[in-house]
Length: 261
Length: 265
Image (cartoon, rainbow over all chains, first blue to last red; front, side, top):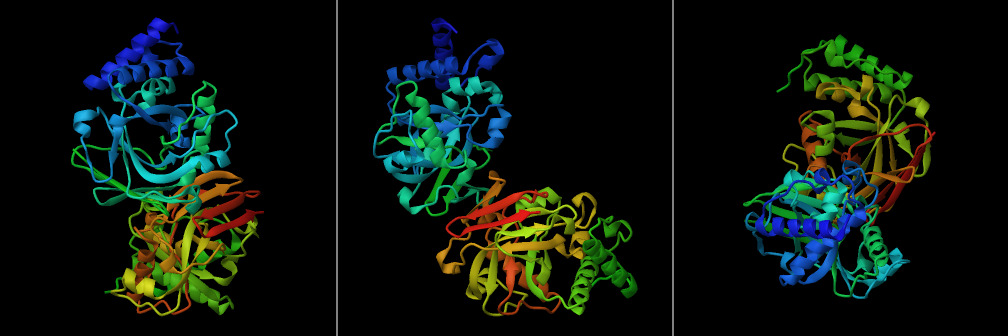
């Protein structure tokens, strides 16, 4: 795909995000978008946001569950960028009707790094050694593509369908919790909606961060000390609307909750 | 108030029919096909008769189980109420042991948490606080279920008569005091031949696995029965049930409680 087209689609997705007007799937208009093209479109969209004042504070990993991978017919995750205007703290109200198009919430484990990680060659041991703490998290994903009609290239180009996220009430050292077996309970408006465990994300949330470090490393990009890394959903995505209250609790870590307006 | 539609002879004959299916390892049509008006009281009468038959043969009852306690299981089976069954001595398989598939019809496995009581529990009115106070310890358990009904298809009444599909169980890993474990967020990961197939957390069982024990006490109370001290109780699947076959190695990992394994031979 030529640079002009990449810029055009990156700009189009940036405007879709700003105007909250979803656009037709890119893959419906271009038959030969590669995964690499899609990441270049995503980078163009990000650069437009950085030009407008946004600051990168971390990264997210998506498409980590078997169910979503088979839905999109891929066998690898994807990633997107987290910026300072996307983060909310425990107790803050999240204005999804003002900010997002078709939001869906997913419970995750967020990693906060204390050391840089530069792939390739990063192991799970490196990731654990570089992790300051893990925190319960709700990611509220959104798609700038109409009706979530996404192929893998569409979601990658659209910053891995990232929306907003909220970090929870407790940070725990990765020494203190088994991230493979830690259980997750998600409640919506007081009712238990789903349960899961760490292994739902590529067998372990640590595998996800390792994958990200090694994948970015191929492009000469590192993970930085202080960054927040969202490691992928452990439960099915849940559509949310203004007035909903969601809570996630993770065994051995803590909880995160958010009220949507 | 009891409501029964079967004569004693019909009840005894159905108990023999269902138990023979288990012992001779063949499936049968569900009993409500021939007795569509059967009630829960009829079905539990049949289950208690199967229990009496086993005890008369010299088997011991070594525990109780709750079934259909998770939303995943209720959705999978198209039912809306939990049920209970009993565990006979020969159901028990050691951790890491072999399970002979030639003795089973179409086995499935579920990851569960088991309670062992240190004081009696008697319903009605038994609540989660009673259960936690009466619990000696909890321990990981994997249940093997095997409906005697064709294609694992049944209604609630039929499954009660079939001892809630009970057939085998494995306990292992590490025991723990209820005060030391958050049973609501306790995570489980089920692997078959090294691949993760199901996972979940304790809250999938009626919000909290101890609620399942309280419900058992209350259901038994309706028949004037209680849960004696020292009873082993499996609280129901945290995950959906997964079909297994000869040659499968299974492992279920429990958050901070180790793992339970078995091999189907």
